[in-house]
Image (cartoon, rainbow, N blue to C red; front, side):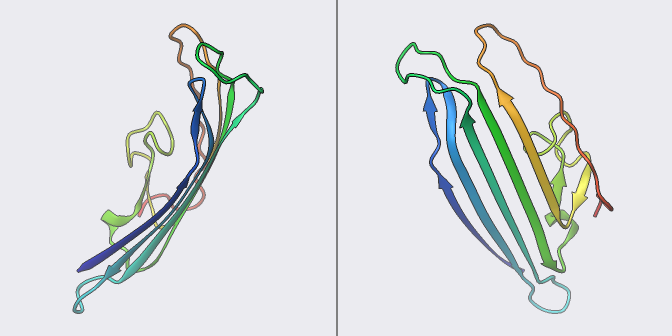
Length: 141
């Protein structure tokens, strides 16, 4: 089996007093080329869009306070053809649903992930998060 991979990334994020702001877009295509009758032929594509939106206008400079940031993220993935199970999209893990291990929720041929979070800078060490996910239809491959 031959495998082709292409990735286009547009990233204009920057740090504003320690907080990440800006936009990040990723488009990825994977093509599996089967050779013979026992190998699969498939196309897998993925599109991720992330926006880091500052909620307050702050003055930029050393020692200045970082703004709270609203993060909006969307990720679509789909496939066409005879996709092997090990090439499916994994659900769960730090890049999809936090609190679960990679692939713990399941695997799927198609996925749509939407996320929103607010990042508020604090001076002491404090961490809190709450994640929800909704599964539509089959979530295992």
